[in-house]
Length: 224
Image (tube, rainbow, N blue to C red):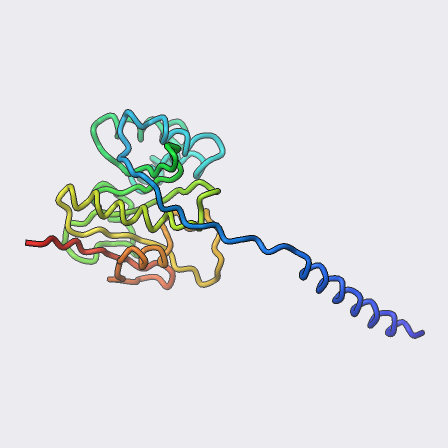
């Protein structure tokens, strides 16, 4: 038999094996959305829970959610323990830099938000510069424990943020999610949130200066 004949048979066998393997491979069930989460502001009493989320080998190494609050030189100079100390100092000063989501009393997710003027990086960004002069509360970061991802946690965090901002008298909540050109997107690049989650929470796009990075807002209205 000619060499090309063996080659054709080899291709057929390979295709048959792959087809059989795919047919026998179990389909992973989609994890159900979590519906019984509780949300609390990060306060000194809850620092240990935050530390567990952002500790060794979790979240982005050395960040401690200070990326948007510092100049790049400051951030790099204190990356790691320095950023951790800066965040703890912020919390102990009475600031509430974000909320923690709990499931069965375990801290499983985080969302960082505050008045926009607390995030100096936003004012220096060409893409994320202010849309107008309205005072807004900015959402800049999410972290969800791996086993809870793709279970609706991000959308619930957004809804919780809206509730907190409303209770504090805020009128506009703003976010800077990504809308990837290719899907799926590695989790590490989606730390500012995904457009799909913001839409589910009722946010609307108000500006887009980058193909993949819109500015989205939720306008809080109160009944008279």
